Image (cartoon, rainbow, N blue to C red):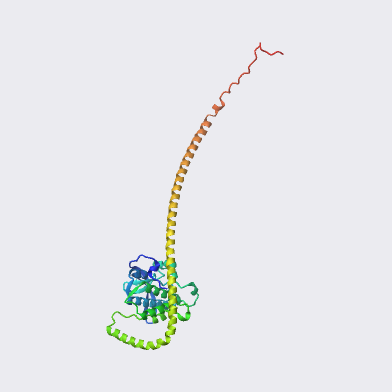
Length: 342
């Protein structure tokens, strides 16, 4: 599956800055890692900024990455680097590629990017194959995916020859293959099958000699190709079927990337709504607090008045007792002339 920088969305192209990287120091037959801090640009941003590059530089990057991983395994007793991807590779100002030191706190962003579904789907070995004993294959798989990413993201000048395309496609296939008998088990095997990087200062006479040798080799190969034609046709059908499958997976990745963007937008909208509700609740809380303060003041005022009234009643208790009783009305006496008869 060919993955390009555009599959990860439009990211802001970062300027060069310093990163903590791993340097390998070799002395005779021994090698040990050393930490260094150098300026450069992450591979993901470099290919976004320069989608057209010299073929020699890209092929050197591919070979250099394989060498860096091989040295890492030698220094770490076959411990895998585990998280090789375009975010963990630094391109220096001298057009070299080096591995970031994933144990440095300043490089924790690599682990955060590994949590992204799009990155994990492309550069992390599937869980179904992690039970194997060969730990180097974790890096072999990620290396194949990273080479795929470079081939899909960069337009090389001059273009790759048919032989170079075939060798790179074969390397990627053996890095990602499911059949243990037809895949690489360590980085040293990969370096032997990579295309030869031609230096920039090669003379014309070497090119002519190469053409002559190539013509002779082609003549000899024609005899062999007649025998292998049937097998090659079957291989081509398999490769075409794999390419179709990879294109389908690529489309699926585009759809998942769009879904991630939509989910991110939805989360931002929910966050804004939550902030608005929180602000409204804070305002209501302030109003309730002010009303409570007013009620507290009124209560204190009523308590003071009540206290005064109680003190007034206690100071004048005799006044209530000294109040005269109301005169009772006398009963009317009947007049003498109107006394009732016995």
